[in-house]
Image (cartoon, rainbow, N blue to C red; front, side, top):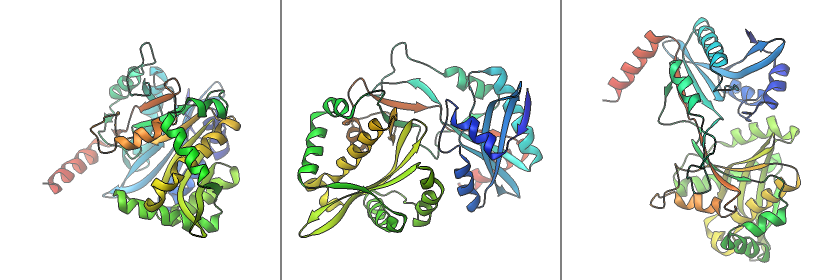
Length: 358
């Protein structure tokens, strides 16, 4: 095996066919990160002329001139292949050290354990605890929090038709969709020059629900990077209200591989109950996914495992309503991990951070 640097074309070819493929592990995200001060690298392992593991990883100075190296959605590797993991990570660690780095942060798009729609472990389902053991044995520290959600909720479409999916939904969800259509709610794709409409809706929603919204420039950059390839859609639900067409709900979707990911959204609170536009946006894209060969519709993050006492339980319940017992699933990823590449700087940074917070 050889540890090598990859050009963009060869990395992309491998990434698109990886079982762990994620839009986060793309040249486009590397370019987005580069616009924000990060330096991208494309690294891999070659065996008998073929790439068997790879990662897009970005670096940025963070502490005393030393850099953090970050692999969003990666690396792309079989985490249960101990020999391959040992070879790749040991070489990656050396590479980072020689490139002035002291820390490697990873957030793999890799499922840990199979769970059903209610978040319960599936009997005889897959369990990738060996992946966690491999990371631990290599010196990785499992983090309590991550930039990306550890738990998501998904509809496994498979070969279902839109009619089959609709019929299997919870009755209340079907009723909300029918009401939206009866009220004249229509969904259309926004053009780049209309992204300010999307931003207005997400900004007002972020203030109401107390989360940090992305700046308009982020949405514009994502559009510029992915739209021409057909890998992003900004959708708007609107309807006629008091004689004029009103924007009511909007959402951003990534279309990558055989999966559609519902990433960001917002709704105008004053129209939510009467028009149910937020339901129509989801149904429109689920229908699109089924008609266009996508196998999974990923509703993205939920706050931990389903818990009725949680203040965010309603978000999970909303997403769950679009699925049947056999097609809905809670996705649990192996989570964020960090590996000290330079232990002196790593431990010094930890010590100073601890002192600062006391």
